Structure formats: structure tokens, C-alpha cells
Image 1 (cartoon, rainbow, N blue to C red):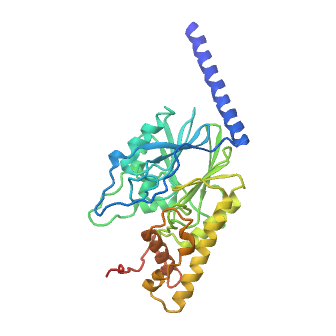
Image 2: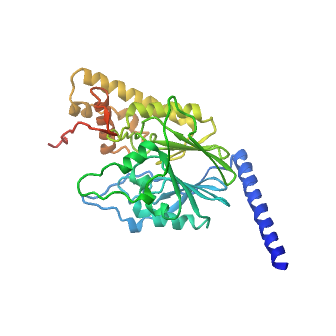
Image 3: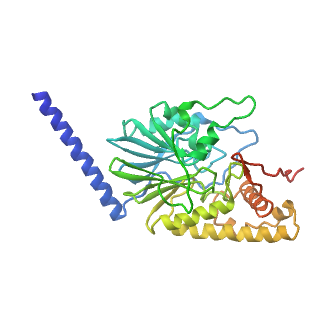
Length: 363
């Protein structure tokens, strides 16, 4: 009888603690205490020697931001990952509480165990749900690892089809543990949740996006925290990147920005896959820059200018001073994508777009 009373007392104390945490989160959100940035992304500049290989063993996974009392963001250390020097890998969102853990994205495969180890510093709850925002390996590389932890993986159907498609000669098929089992599709004009999850005192909306960064993008809205994980169609470290081969496009990224303007409120915290947290007003300058570059590249291409001539025009010069990570590689990739898109843009066939191959300027 005494053990039963003690058990009831423990459950009562846990319930009170949970209610206090949820109330505290609401109070903090209303008072403006959140978000809390603990480790901001790096600003660079960064230089990596020729032949440099990412030292995965040196990268730490850190709690970099707290969006609410039970919603944390994780990211890797800066200056080690040449693909993402400001913070290694992709940003991971972690919602935790008595219902277990919901993750948005799973990091690079090499960082999956470290990601779990960091999660275990603030919760021992089971990993119940993973949502994939898009297919890139810095966001889905840990899928198999977390699938083996028991997580149910959600994504757009396009992403699942990409994962299960033939992978080419000699390439091994992905382990089923890492492939999404719960899928949904985008329907125009967008902005409507395909899935809504009630968990840990939060309401989470999985909102499929039009083809933008890739063909299978999803944004994730946390209603009570007033926050949206907006993945990679926006970035403020380096210039925009649309994965055109995998169905993305620069125009689609503009459409995604416009949709976010409708879905988000003025105080909504927007959490990109890379870079700093923003509000929707911060998207205005980003959008204007893309529109400006599209128009300038289209005009030069209509004049018969070659890609090398367009690259030499240094069209991003007005934006370089305010763009962190404005390397030549980032600028050239962006301008090349725009150049390919404004005229004779290849269609998507069987989930892929065959893009023209351009010789490097040195050739």
C-alpha cells in the first residue's frame, strides 16, 4: 500500500512538473523570453585546404537554440564541415516530453549517435517520430539510426519515392529502417497541414511544400511555440541553392517564400535548416534579391550572353556585403542555377531533371 501511495505521489509530482513546464513555456513565449540562442552560427570567413576531408570525430552536436521549454534546436560545431562551415550538418529540431521525442530531421549519418547523445542530455524519452524536411543527407543521413530506435518516419511521398528509386550501378539500396513509412502529398495552393500531431502539450502541423528546394519539401509548424521549421529554401549563410536535379527550382523557392508569408504571423519564429533564426519580414530582402537576379540574368541571356559572361558580370555585388558566406563557389552556383532556369529549363522526368553540364571556367 505504501509503494502504491509513493507511486501515486511520483505520478502526481510528474504531472505537476509537466503542467508547470507547459505553463512556463507559454509565459516565456508571451513575455518574449524565447527564443534563446545559446550557440549562434559562425560567420567565417572559412578556408579549407585542397583535399580536406570532414573530421566527423571532431564535430560536436550542440543545443544551439531553445525555442520553448520543450523545443530545442541542435546543430554541429562551426569551421569543420566545408559543406556547412557555419554549423556542421543540418539543423535538428527536438520536441520532448512525457509522450516521447519528435525530431525534425536526423543530421548526417556520421553525426547520428552524437545527435542522440546530445538529446539524452535533456530527455530520456523514446524517439517516437521523425519528420524529414527534405532528402539531403545532412537532414536524412541519420534516418536508419533513429528508425532503429523505433521512430516512425514521416515525409512527402516524393521524398520516399526518391529514397526507394534505383540508386545506380554498385550502389546499395537504403535500409528499410531509414525509409519513411508515413507519407503525404502536396496539393495546390498549399499551406494546409497534411498531418497534425498532438504531442507533449504541442500541436505540430506537417505542411507539404511545392517543389522548391527539392521536390519533396515539408515545413513543420509548432503552433503553441509559434515557430516553423522552414528547411532549406531560405538561407542566410551563402546564396540560395535549389536542387534542380531533384525537382527543385529558384522559382519554386520564391513560391515557398510567398507561402510562408501567408502561413506565418509577424512574431512567428522561422527556423531554417542553416543560418540564423528569422521572422517573416526577414524574407522580404531575400525575395527581392532573387527577383532582381532572375531579371538581370534573364536580360543578359536574352542578349545572347554565355554563362561565363554572366558570371563575370558579378551580379551579386550589391548583396555581397550583407550576405555571410558569400564565397565565389556559392555565388557561381546560384548564378548558374538562375542561368539554367530562365531559358530551356529541363522538365522533371521520373523524379529527376537532367541539367546541362557546364565546363569550369578554368577549362
